[in-house]
Length: 269
Ligand SMILES: Nc1ncnc2c1ncn2[C@@H]1O[C@H](COP(=O)(O)OP(=O)(O)OP(=O)(O)O)[C@@H](O)[C@H]1O
Image (tube, rainbow, N blue to C red; front, side, top):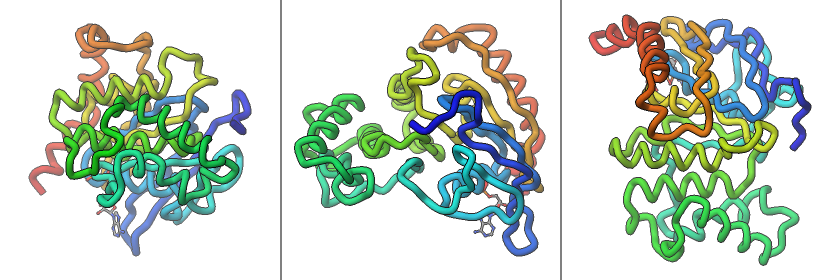
């Protein structure tokens, strides 16, 4: 990886985003550290997806600067992988075909011969616990399995930065908990930060943000703006016991208090 120690992986400096005269995001400055798991929470309309789209290079800020490894983001690139809530799998491709799609058809596979690509796909399928389902098609999979495929496709390309927009929101509560642990394992929470990828993870779930993240960025709305950055100093590796601690409950409550009024307002307007 190109990461320079002590330099931020991503730096946002006074970033603003307008849609015509509507301010979707106002003056956001934030450093994201290499290997960090950063969660973003905030009420509906606070600009979470707008931030992620700009980091992905799918949209451009109206003002300010966004640097990745010290260089301005000019568009999408293989150094960043994106996963959405309803990440559309290719229905005509099997699990193996979907996981390997970026390697076969995208820049991530350049320089890998067929055997190397197949070996990587097999390793990733194992990693996301889809062994035995390689030849199944998306319509033959549960929602949880489909998001595993999407996760596999994301990491098969080995991007340095994972950008995830509510990837677990469509799943039932139990499956979501299982996949949270999978994401932490894949992120290598038991390894030093230098061994990890950088993750930016948007969620509506405050508990989910606290369970997963090193820091939680809390955005406010109207206009979208930074409200607080909360350090989550819960020890790693985290597991079921983590959720039962008083520290976990305290952190979740304090984040909820930060967004409660706006979240309630967002439901009645
Ligand atoms: N292409 C667009 N054109 C006009 N307005 C937009 C566009 N994209 C987003 N917005 C507006 O910008 C604001 C921020 O949107 P964004 O999707 O980033 O919020 P969010 O925090 O991700 O919301 P949610 O939690 O509902 O997904 C919203 O008020 C939205 O309506």
